[in-house]
Image (cartoon, rainbow, N blue to C red; front, top):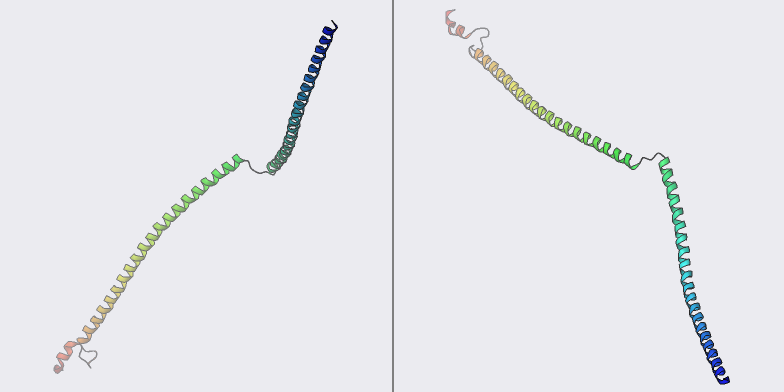
Length: 169
């Protein structure tokens, strides 16, 4: 029995050693896994810290943009919709002015044509008057030549017939 007990003790000791070795292996594996997870967790913590810093930075930037926008609005700057309506008004005014300009140009063309017609009429009228005056001068000159031709030279004051009857005196 002593041999059996010794064997049983040996088996129990061997089993205990196996359990201890297995436990040590499991603890080593668990420690290794914990270290790996710890490293991963540290990396994730660093990433979280970096993201938190970025978030804080962005929040600060957003806050400064809000302040800038608020100061922009408080300075009486018009909103987008009011600017849009102002642009529409300006476009309508521009179109109206363009139409007025077009009407003015058309009126100027009509007036220019009337002036050209008036100038042509005046040119013709003046030409006719000059021609008429020239004809009147010519007819007066011819009339004077006829009356002179009826007189004999050297006898002024006597007419044509008086020179014919000269001997009667």
